[in-house]
Picture 1: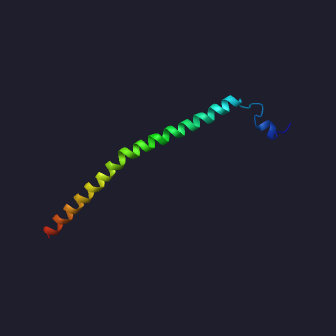
Picture 2: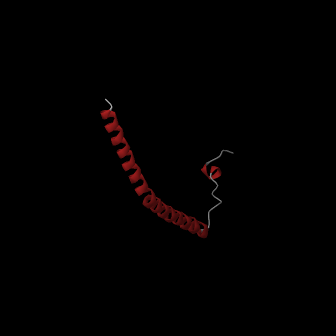
Picture 3: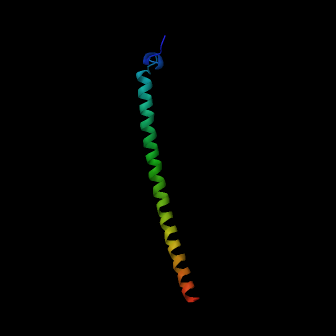
Length: 71
């Protein structure tokens, strides 16, 4: 007997509507939670990275001034 698509795919198993709805609800809840976490992390880390950028700029300026003065 040769295998065809019906034998290869397990068509006897179909998820129940409740399982499908639960899966969809869990996916939506996961997306919402991750979006909230992303916004919170963005609100916390954005000022920190902005401050680090200013610090790097100031240190670079001081280094350039020192380099020019020691020529």
